Length: 418
Image 1 (cartoon, one colour):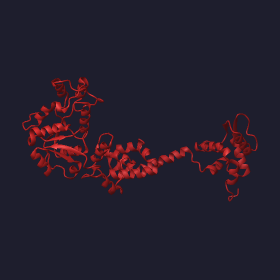
Image 2 (image 1 turned 180 degrees about the horizontal axis):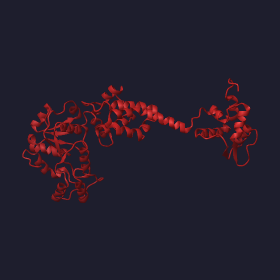
Image 3 (image 1 turned 90 degrees about the horizontal axis):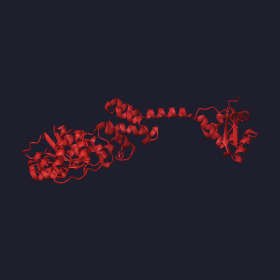
């Protein structure tokens, strides 16, 4: 064979096999090659058009067969191509010349899997260097999250390089603005904006790093970032306190017995330097306001969550715990209250403050009128499993305001509640 002779005469090949009326045949052949199947035997086309049947007749130089379907024997096509010199190497070479190189699907799959494995190399290195993130790295590699948000191995490698770079810098101490951190670490202040693939992956790693609970919504994401020292919004997240000390501003308000609102920014920049041994925590501002009215500067220190614990509240309580404080918690006796208490318990340990099944039953029995019914989905009470059972049994809610006198007695200077 003349080595200078082209393997395929493309001009003649296109005239012979490249017509639109034979596209069905070429497509079938390519799919066979992709599946790793030989180009032997026959292929059939149901209900061919007259032009498709005529094109097959021209290809073979004879009628391909009668009947309602059109059947083409592949060995006959291969023989035509070889004998004519159009494709001396046969039918497979002709299909590649017409449609481009054919990679068998199994080979393509193995190649793609190797590419994805290489893309996940940053996770492997992170797991080696940070063993506490090894389980998270394995989950991200295996659960398809990276493939969903990245789309391709090339994009995934870039994404994971950046996510790992961020996680290696966390937690941020002292706390920093998320946008400034992103600019310093990744070169763009918007790199960790909500909704981006990088933010999705990185926030997943942050939760593994800090143990932040599952959740959804902007407030939850803000709290999750804050758990690693990254402040998405450092002024709108607040916590309400009474008679805490440890900064000039707190000392002044405690001396006057007035409530104080602390922002996440204040807590990040100038947290309290001292902490009392015991701090009470309530769910509703009405309790704190009443404590200020009743006891003023003599009230025991009190922190109010104002519903689900904010990033500011969690930051404050974690800091106070680090200074040696312990906590007692009370909330509404309803399903929402149990969820708030459980969320708090996932962040800091606390003991129940009149927040048990016995206290709930006593409050129900002492009620002057029938309390409002429970609403919403039932929740658990890990600190006292009987409390959730008691709520389900009685089916009514007891708000903090309904037991306010007992709570205020516990906060007074002569409190004897244990």
